[in-house]
Image (cartoon, rainbow, N blue to C red; front, side):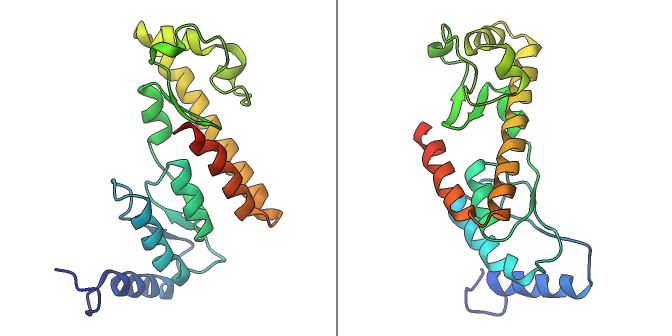
Amino acid sequence: MVNARGPFSVPRLRAMCAKELVAMDFPGYAIGGVSVGEGLELLKKVVGMTAPYLPEDKPRYLMGVGLPEDILESVERGMDMFDCVIPTRYARRATLFTNRGRIRLTHKNYRRDFYPIDPTCDCYACRNFTRAYIHHLFNANEVLSAVLASIHNVHFYLRMMADIRKAIEEGRFVDFKRQFLAEYLKGK
């Protein structure tokens, strides 16, 4: 059993591990162990207790984390890079990311919805296809459905990360995060 005050507590072990890795002077550092359903609160706690021990002038990589809200919280705590199957796994299951949250294109409401996946998006799928058409593709079990959904989701993430980078450079990340989440979480 882990004792929060003992020599083998999670915060102490993470600090010890981070310090020993930093002493080895790697070109970058990774944090793991928070990508299999632990939840946002634990993610914030673990990243918050570990990232301060990692050098700011080297890349900090958070392994396997990929929901937009998780990325924003992790960036705020000092993380630089992420990898995750979420954009394409969700796409294959008809869940698409938009500025107003996630939508599930197999839902009957999209059968006659002739808008793009996300009207604010300029990806190939949004410029050329409607929600109704992609809904039809999913219902017909056409591979193109997952391809178009993946194109859109990956584009969403690339745009989100570019917007995060710009907000950091302009010194307005906290405001960006607040505005992004206020709009994004409306859809939940």
